[in-house]
Image (cartoon, rainbow, N blue to C red; front, side):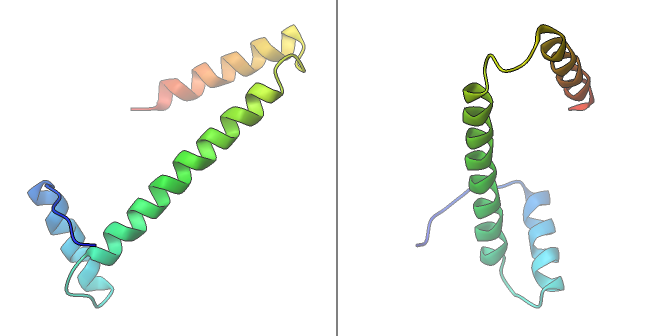
Length: 79
């Protein structure tokens, strides 16, 4: 299906560059690949969340504190 999406000039330039490296003229395949990866990551994240919620109550207070601290440390490295 054709649609119109507005993107930044620098994103378009990078997409065209990547497409050229793959021997393509356009970047539709790259957009499709990116969307598939994004949607898969959302689904995986939701599945992980549901799995974590199902495990609620299985950790000791000490394990919970350790997990909370590790999560905090990871979040500090995010942009």
